[in-house]
Length: 416
Image 1 (cartoon, rainbow, N blue to C red):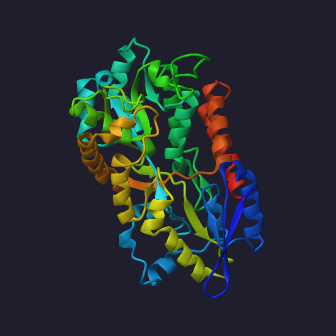
Image 2: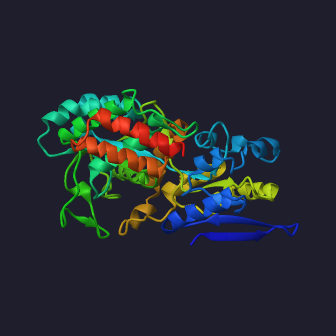
Image 3: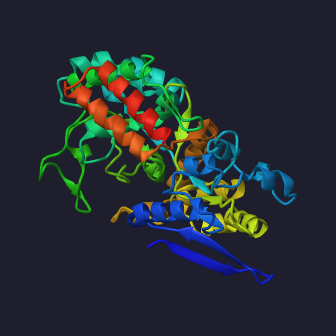
């Protein structure tokens, strides 16, 4: 069930914050929508599971720019503002993320070859198509059974890869800000056609069969089955590759993570087709426009953005508060318990930890400013797109037919 936390303020009034768990998501969304559209509801909402663009478009959320600009105690310079900017809707700041996350891409230098490896080392941002174009000739001649991309999943990677690219480029096809769609100008059909071609060339690993491969903690480990040209590392795991490199440098076994292989190198972030880096967030909050306690609600939002609060409630995602972020980067590498059982001794190696911290900090200084938009999309629209796309992949429709169907269906859904 959704949880409503009621807090008593100094003046005797109360403020309410509503949160939920992933299991409660459908009921939570329904309840919030009913309350907020009816002019009721909590003062502040955790927006992790909510379609905040819909609430913002309906006028149900408060534009927080007024508070941010009018409050002399609030200084935007104290925060990683590109994360705030990346969540704006129609120019308004209707939600404030308190943390952020991203994915770091790795490449296998042996599989990629010297020419592609040199290209990948020269910069730290590529689109998916730039990555695969750089290795397509070597991949075509590769008889090892290696695949293009590993998302560290035992699910069908064909679908995971498509969904990942769709999320990155969602705004090419759907503009939530003005309720318009764009599936028929050739961009979407081009995407479908190129992706189907890669499917035909065996770029992706299908779902693993039962009992295939080794396990870690009871889960199958696809990294032990076949090689990959590229890997996606969620930000909460990027510690692994820096620790592996540092342990090797100090002459110790690079056993920090099964997911990182000896030939893996950091490529950087994968951009969308507009050249933008995307980020996600697990915690973000919005103020109900119907709130009768807006001043107090704003004070609570500031409390959530405070350095101490950001460090005390978060162990995996990166804080938006700059001071908290700087502390967290150090803690992330040097002091947090290792979540892979059996390798806690690595945490005691101060020399390796310091080397890893230096390299990690350098990479983060380059990557974080390039995270320019929040990867947010509508689940219903996403399901519509996936359904039509796979009808094309399975030969049931042409790319043009799928695109036209989406132009009609998604357009109608957005304007209901």
